Length: 119
Image 1 (tube, rainbow, N blue to C red):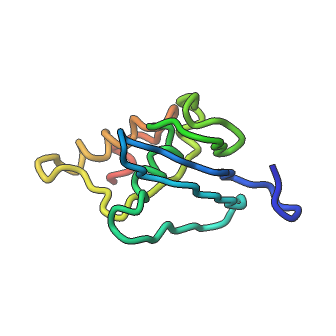
Image 2 (cartoon, helix red, strand yellow):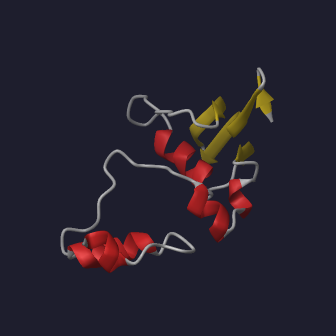
């Protein structure tokens, strides 16, 4: 998929997601080029979190391709390539630094050694 000659990292057309009678997302079109930094800003309740969950493969809906794959069927290797950062991403306060680093390391197929990262 390309947009004006650029390969797209994210391609979304007509994205819709309903929960019962409520439309959480209603017709989003996105084309995000490789290497582009993209932020999703909208009022509370506009469907930002649902859209990002779909891009991560945690929900399925519509025509969605991230790094050339449908996120609903993304493999662990595919997930390790997706760099989504939530505004308030944080680990529970009860975790130590070591536990937190180990937790996030499990997201990747070949993570760096947590002890090396901490050092």
